[in-house]
Amino acid sequence: MKGDQVSELIRVLQHTDLLHTLSVRFRLAYDLNFDPDEAINAGLMGFAAMTGTTLREARPQAGKHVDMINSKLRREWDRRSGPLIERLERIDKQYKETAIGPLLSQFVQSSDQIVQTISRGSTIHGCRPTIAPCGARSKR
Amino acid sequence: MQPHEAARRALRESESVIRQLTRDRGYWVAADELSNMWFGNSFRPDPLVLRAVTINLGCAIDTLYERCEEEGLDPDRIRSLGDELSMATRCTGKDADSRRDLLYITKAIIGAISREGRALLGRSNNSSDAAETWSVLWRKVLLEHNRQQECSVKMLQDQHLLGRYALESFSEGLALI
Image (cartoon, rainbow over all chains, first blue to last red; front, side):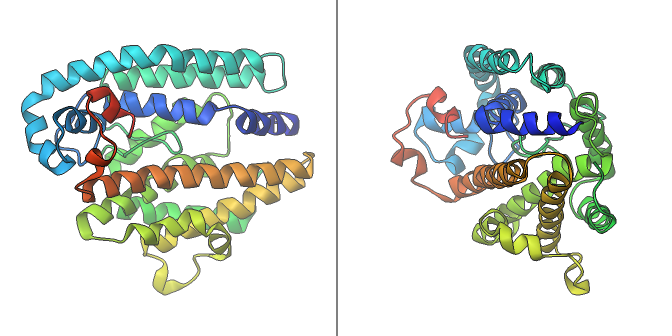
């Protein structure tokens, strides 16, 4: 990257919520396929809240309701994805004509491709690694 | 822009230890591939720095928090990674006794990235504001990552957490994660 592109990228990160938006989107995508063996994830949090139980109480029960939890996670994903994508598109458009514009567009597009892959439950060589700062828990 | 040789050595050494102490080889093959897919085509960063910042550091921090749950490691010890960034920047990872201690190695990698990031931005044609702004952003991202992990650990330990927030629906539960 050239010096002016680096400065511009720092400005984008300073003045927008790009990283936070990506973080929320990636976290939801990772948790979209409920894994009852994980210590904590979105499905378990949702189930505990819905049943009014602690996380420790919820964990063994949640394993018996995987299909229901998956369907609720999918509904939340459908509901929340639109506004998150709109925020990313707005940032992309805002900086389109700047020195960082083309690289930023490419980055947002590749982020979306990876989110689509993860949300389908697809793996890379059997793993679903997370990437800081946008990842949540590492999936071994 | 290339990092100094000393920083490269610190990142290489920490990579070797982190990858031995945390996940299996298959995980790292997948992680490298994913990292390249995401950042390699657009920003084309130095591969060693890319691996250090995106996956080595993230996995080291995640593993430390997993140990809170599995081995009773105190989350407050890990919080110092973000709260005491100035201390981390003085940590060189040269103490032989500490070289295989994951917490120490994680501080060393944060130190190397912190020093080198500032130096690189200072050396290039950017304004001095860029180095300062980057430092603030880097600290913020680290703190947020740690806060998220710490929150997950403490949620499991806290019997009254959900009651305290008066959560009733599945959707409300997701807001905490």
